[in-house]
Image (tube, rainbow, N blue to C red):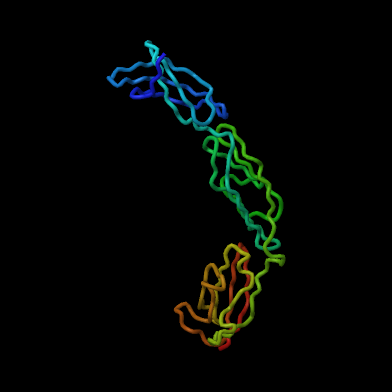
Length: 247
């Protein structure tokens, strides 16, 4: 028998039809000669190990044609992912957070179930405690069960500390009305009123940094020394009181 690799071409269609490392591959053989003639054989099935393979076919004249190909694993039976979690801000708050990202493997779509009842890539509003999450693919693959614990970032109670005075005189000391623990809440909104009940300032998402009252009115002008009244709203709760502005 004679063996040839060039200029003849062996073409084939390789289809992975099972999810295993010994993948069943269907080969449709076609030998194309350098004179334009071709020979097509029947479709065959072989057990192909993932990696490089060589397929041979023989024509009626006893000439063997060979062709190598790379057999990749299609439909991996494992699921990979990236998991992250963030603790609740402090004792008593239910603002812990967990998420999944970069999910790969098996077949889409994925079903994600968290033990707090959440579905999807994220689980929000988590109190301190133990949780689990698992990913299931459309063809029944299951990820490992991810077990995690949500703790808290601060060991103190989540209470806002609203000071009763500040001195915005430009000396760098106590120049703005800071509210302790604002970072423990999803959003803190502040409205300031004068003695007549007129709104003189407001800020949404109060953070003691980019949104903070420095003794100015809505137009950015300095307010005079006086007693002012605040309404602070945060996560469905409300605080009211007074604050002394001293220049």
